[in-house]
Image 1 (tube, rainbow, N blue to C red):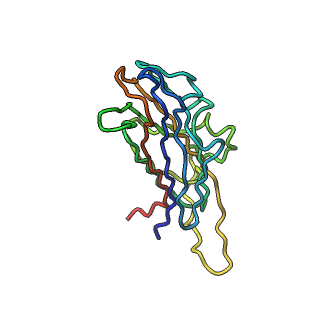
Image 2: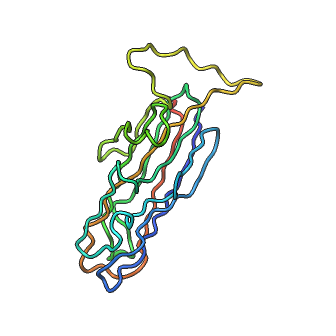
Image 3: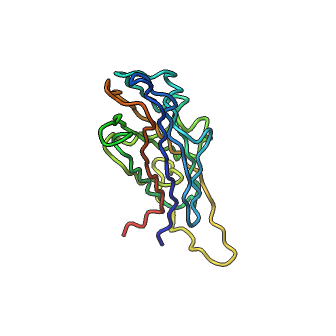
Length: 199
């Protein structure tokens, strides 16, 4: 059974005023979901590069790191006995038009240790740069413990126990080109989480 939840991250980047400054660089979230995995944007629901640097000029590179307060956070809640596959499809640039772009490199990490959101970031597993998916148990098993028995199949009156993992989105905007025109720069990433079927 292939169950999935989807998230769409909408990028809204406003302004290169007079070709020298960018204002309101943020990535907003929208939800697309099915089945019984619940994927939720937490906090402000956006990745905002102005939280790192209020005024962005030509030549700037702005990085939001995993440990920063500006990191976007999503929670993934589902059947704690199952593995999930998380896929992030992201553009490499934000665009005003074909000739005006700003480079973008997004990263992501996950924490499945059963910790509260406030502690999960410090225990997060960073997915290496260049990878766009990761498969992991929704609830991490203690090291050295044997695999549990197969999960109980769904049936009338049975509710599977749940667990929550956290996903962190962060990355780098720039170098902002010196000849970038003023306007609305945009892009879009899709985040998909589904139960792993190992077919």
